[in-house]
Image 1 (cartoon, rainbow, N blue to C red):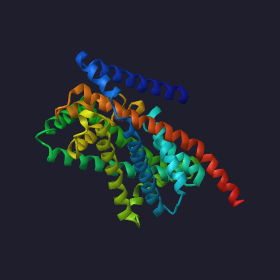
Image 2: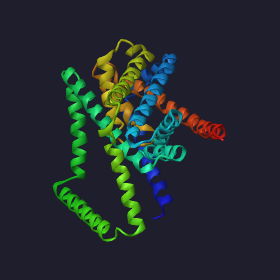
Image 3: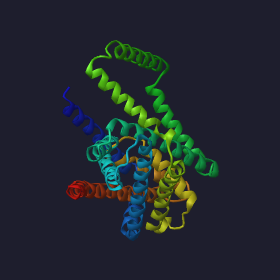
Image 4: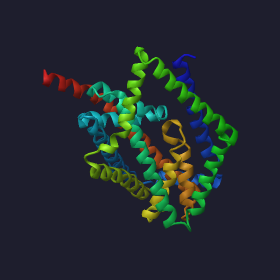
Length: 339
């Protein structure tokens, strides 16, 4: 099948899933809660949107700095502006096609900084591994500090997620999958050894080697302290954005760190669902159900979820668009300056 047609079908599938989740999210709201939601949006304090956007942009900047730190052991030192713009464009691209941004930001930086894209892909894999670890730590902190409030809810969501995976990965399917993977690995090793002299095989091996170098770059970090600092800073900014976001609604202004931790945990878990627009439809449901555990009406919780999702969506859309405009202009000026 043509790659463009396949990409289009994939996008339409995820878009359709996103639309369905929006409908599902809105459909399950009781009629009596609609008045609360409308009043919440009507009376929201939209001035807090500005600091939330600034905090999110700071977290993205810190992510760009952390990415540069991962590239340092590979011998590459891209400019901060290009790295930051690539990160912003990557986030914007994820709104259209999930995970597209991870590939696109590597391609962009490779184009403007002459850094091998395969090695950049490896650094992204290393980054995501740390993010998963951070999410696990945040979930553990939330669970053990508030086991009486959110423990049951988190266990239920994790169980639902696990049950969904079990349906996909039964014992027989896992055995078949493992056998297929082993056959592919064995075949790849055989091909690479037997046809090592062929140009295409050499190129594939070079790409795989580059990806592996990117993944293992974290072992040779010179600034491990700064890497850990930026990792903590990124997640602290995520937490702070939720806590400040509470000030947007009168009903949530009294919420603090514990409630913010819970909303961040379940909201981040919702982001695992690969739909265009950053888990459109799922995020408000998870956040709404979470805040209802603290006595907030579920309709108001969903309204808060939509508000936070909307701020993140438009922040990524606008900042990514601005980055796309500035990226060629700034690099053109650099070229003229060097000339």
